Image (cartoon, rainbow, N blue to C red; front, top):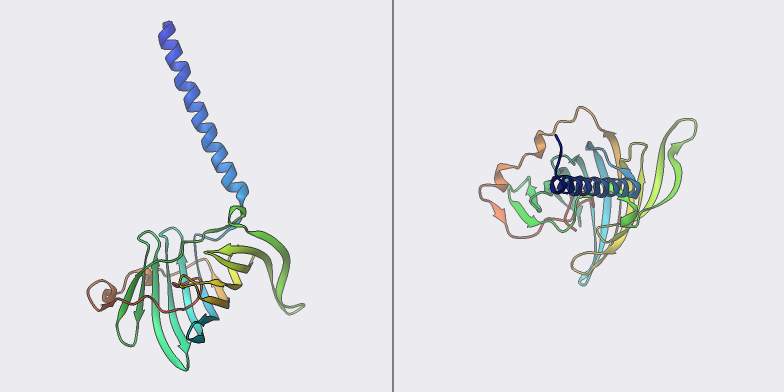
Length: 233
């Protein structure tokens, strides 16, 4: 079949635009790939222990915490369940972040009250140069000849906080220190560590929303301060 000049011209323009579009998509993908220093696994869990000190106007206070943390980047959700301690008072909580809806839920397990609040931080799935991440060094945790974990240290900015983060060979965070100002303008500094980390055979049923957070019993206050990776700061 012989094409007319007009048909040939139109097909050539379509081919040109498709090629340009594919080229732009390819450049965008390559730009994203070269920007990433490491990306966290789609799903992982571990136990987190740490503390954060907030220098509030009425005086500084420290919250320590320990809980199990599960992260699902496919569903854009995470859950932390454990204990916060402040001034000798313990609060058992289950904290859920729904990044798709930009809402966090904190269920206080002893009282059954659920606080619901808008998320004040974004989901972090990778350490990227565009976020200011810079590789600092390769080193290890542990005792030589007994047990060690190879880690890589990065300096970055995480949701506005100056952060030094250590990740293992799978780019799972194992330790982090951070400082900066929270959304109320208060200075804070914190540190946490992970242990018993795994990426397989994870039960994600706890990522479902507690009934108390969906059908009444919902308070109006913001979520308690807990670990950096799991709460509203």
